[in-house]
Length: 214
Picture 1 (spheres, rainbow, N blue to C red):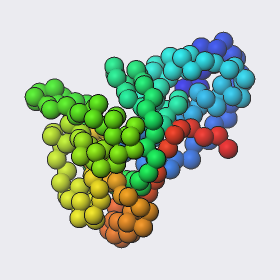
Picture 2 (cartoon, rainbow, N blue to C red):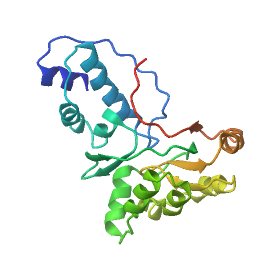
Picture 3 (cartoon, rainbow, N blue to C red):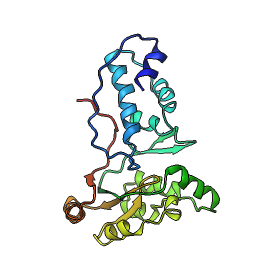
């Protein structure tokens, strides 16, 4: 990401970059892509290049299909290969518990399996309507991930469903699942139960931006 930034901008400078990973690797949570976007945005700020959003995204997609999302983050409808983004009104309530399964097939293998099957696709417009109307019940009714048809990791999902969430679904091609809760107390109770079983898990809330500089 740094090399691409300097080459694109014709800058011969450099930067010292230290990465402290909090998002687990190979979790389907976009940790590496978020790091790449942060480097682009950070260098744009440090070198005062003031690149347009479009220019930043043009660079980002060269690094990965989901990197443009992290240039802004928030709630987005992604089309194309993931680089065609339309902003949605953010969901304003709910707590999200993330829990990572131990392992899964590679994303490449899961895409191959998806291509081999007649896969039912999610009702995207219903999800967008639910988010924009802050209708968490409708959102939960329409949560669906086609990858679960080719990787049915039922053990962790069943554990999470027993913790009284509003809904549970897979993130991307996994291996992380997310559960929605209406309040922090219920999310924390679920977190404590999973943590006691040495399951990697986190509690988070809906965010309006992906990269925040402090």
